[in-house]
Image (cartoon, rainbow, N blue to C red; front, side, top):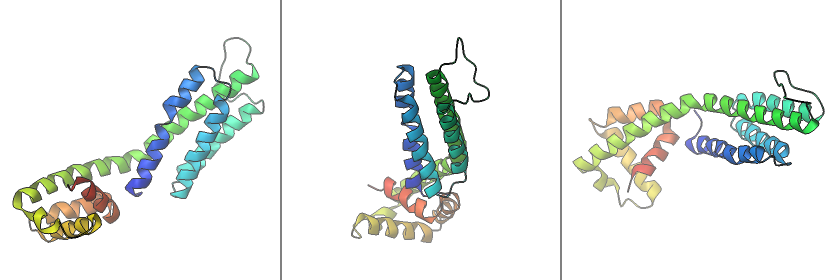
Length: 185
C-alpha cells in the first residue's frame, strides 16, 4: 500500500481533469499540450511510487503523441473530415479518459482499505476519549509525540488493541499514524 500522502497527491492530479476538459470543451488550442503534460505528471508520480500502471499511462501518452504526428488512433471516428486538430484533441481526450479510469481502478483497493481504517480509527478515538485514554497521551510534547504516545496506548489497551491491529493490517504502520494524527484534537 502506498503512503497516504502519496495516494492523496495522485488524487490531486485527478482533480485537475475537470479544468482540462473545460479547455477541451472551449476548444482551447493548447488542450492537447495540456493533456500531454498532465499525462507526463501522472506517469512520473506513478513511476516514483513504483505503481506498474505508469507504463499504461505512458502508452496512452504515446497514443496522444502519435495523433499529433498524424496517426488516427483505432476506435476514433469523426463527423466530417478528420482535421489534424480534431484527431489530436480527440486522441488526447480519449487518453485522459482512459488514464483517469486506469488510475482510479488502480487506487481503488488501497483507498477502500484506508476508508475502512479511517472509520475504525474514528471509533477507536471516540472510545479512547470516553475512557480517558487520550488525556494520558495528549500533552506529551509535539503533535508527533502525542500521536505516538496515543498509538502506544491504543496497542496496550485490551479493548482498543484489536482495533489497532486491524488498522495496521488495513493501512500499514505509517498510514495508521497519519490517520490517528488527523483524528486527534
